[in-house]
Length: 217
Length: 331
Image 1 (cartoon, each protein chain N blue to C red):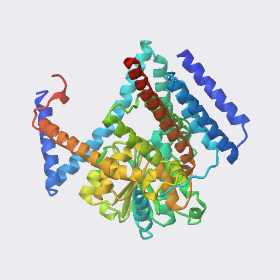
Image 2: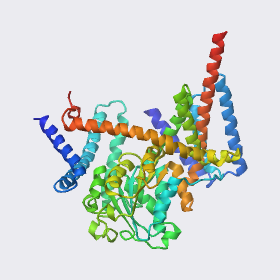
Image 3: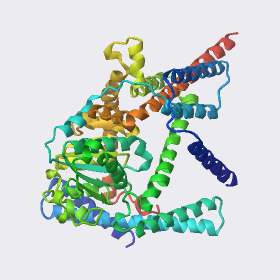
Image 4: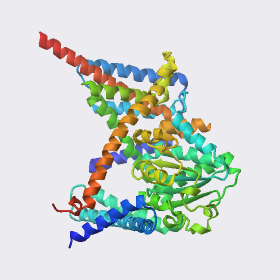
């Protein structure tokens, strides 16, 4: 029963979701509303579950003095601090001037942006060491990257004007052409491939052929 | 761990010293700016020569160059021509052509990590809407989204042309906040907004908000703008709200994500797209009010040029190395 019940739920919900898309009338539209509400409720519970699990794992790390336990302590302290200040602020906890807003603006935002900004340094270093025109495909990729990178910033057209390039050969125009045609065609091919893969995997799950999501074999 | 903490402490001390000691604002003259650019170019040529001779520079040197390329332009004043691309112009036209009082739904689906790219878009977009007397409905599928919206809204409301209008929350704009459920939230909004957002962020019931009196579902929305940095985001809005319920949607995406949106743009499912920081700067240009994105374009230009230079240097060294190898084998 531990496997059969989840399989039945999956199959029933899956079939109803497919049907409601093509028949948006009673009772299927009502089923759609119910399931969507359930999804939102499950999602809200998952946030709590995730937060509590993070606390449990971090507390365990500190208790056992595993490597990097200091970072786990920072996680717990930050979580408790933000949660306490947020709850204490009531329904207007996010308003300008509140403690939560201060922490969000001056601590959380800069830290998040810094982590993301580090990418630029690694991209530059990796490009220097590994981005080579070794064969035709790599050369095409390199050329596309060159034009998109230079065409996406104003300095590209400034250089173009300086060397008197015709309007149609300005880096920004070439970038628009690459993004609109070559990129779109490639993206569409990838999208269609992914969509077909999703359809086949979904059918396997609904029909109970694919059971790996239940765990075990 | 100890070393990390020491480094962290040292960094805080350095930042505090800079903050306290350096006068503000520092602006280099045009001559000094071009002198710095010349020095950077000379250094790149030096690296190029070294690399050709088989001495690859370490990653720390590359990091240093990127750091310089990002930081120094903040103090420079060099004018750059910004051209408005057709996809950006479409977002502007779609919004500016709406009649006063039209309702615009703006969904904030990003977090502070993507704020440097998306926040300038949000600020400009809010300013444009408020200038044209459009009614704004804010929501978010990411927990941090509505907080980002409030930050952008405060900046737009502080604009001198908008302060005069004496706009009121609940009448001219409303923040419905975050709702969990990803694309299912969009799906439910297709039939009834109220079920997903029974109250706004201030706890005011949906039915008591004057702006939302005639808003039941997407059919009551004149245009929608989605600011997205991933999942759930623009793709989900297109697949559910646009394809199923016929919502008119424009989007502002991070540079990384924007490439994936072009098929939707060309198919007409997306009515306009702002891609990355350059998209934000182009939008500022279209609205006629230069803001943070335009200011950030100089560091962006510098960093792109530095990355391209390193790619070219790396490839030149690679080909020359291959040539030398072939010559040695012939001997």
